[in-house]
Amino acid sequence: MPQFDKNDRTSCISHSIAILLVPFLFVLGLVLAYLGLFTLKVEIHTLGIVGFIFVVFAFFVKHNANYSVCYMKNSFSKMEEDLQSALRANALTIMGKTKSTLHVKDFIAEYYKDIRNDDFARVASSVFPMMGILGTFIAIALSMPDFSVQDLGSLDREISLLLSGIGTAFYASIYGIMLSLIWTYFEKRGMAKVDNQIYDLETLYGKRVWKHSELIKHEHMQSELKDQQIVQTLKETFNMDFIKELNEQYLKNFTTIINDTTNSFTKLTVHMQEASSELRETLENVQTRKESVIAVQAMEKNIAGFNENAKKFTKVYALL
Image 1 (spheres, one colour):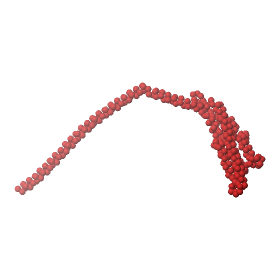
Image 2 (image 1 turned 135 degrees about the vertical axis):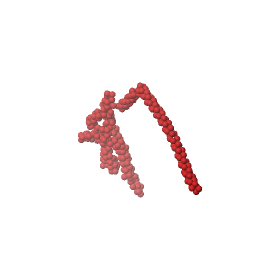
Image 3 (image 1 turned 180 degrees about the horizontal axis):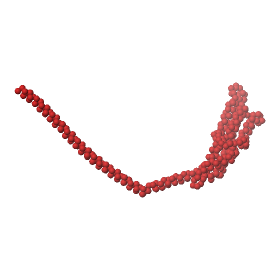
Image 4 (image 1 turned 120 degrees about the horizontal axis):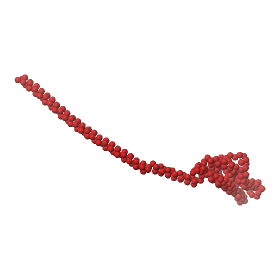
């Protein structure tokens, strides 16, 4: 946020006085009427309500555009120096031209973002009429007479007091509407001054700032250039000679793999045949060995039977 010295703040008092002059004269007129210097009837509660609305309006004045533009004028030289530094800091060179990507309007909005409260400035024009209407109803409620009287003369007096209170109560609504009109007028006037300053700066530094359309055009050009480079790289990489050489190398490798696979299957077939022959011989040998074992067992059985018969014959011969 820009800094201001006492001289700057003193010079801006005239802007606040211009905004507060008519509202102050209205309050002063009501005070004089209450004191009897004017032929207007003003109740003390109406004067208090209007005075309170004036105090709230005085608090809002520092957020009015016509008051804030004074600070902007006092810091214009410093702001312009900072703007030039920011333009140099955001410089971008495109096709031999150097400009800034910083927009003047965005820089000014950021530079003066804390000079006033925009929320107060937006709601002010509707706050004061609402306060005036509220003050009117409060004044009517405070001036409401007692209608419990019995005689007709007293009732007429009470009705006269009510009508008199209602008449003075509407001063608050009138005052609120008037403050809204004054606020809107000075707000529009201040914003017009700000817009003129921004326009002058944009005109002055417009040639040093890249336009949005120029940046978009540059992005498209960069994108097209990248696409062309990619296409050219692909053409250089995948040319016909390279593809032909790649196909020949692929066929050569494929033929080598097929031959190696055929030789492997041939060797595997031979090995399987040899293994089958060896297995057949082994089975025949086993069968032969099995028949030999059976023959030996039969011979052993016959020999055992012969020995048994020989023993019997010996016993019989011994008995003879």
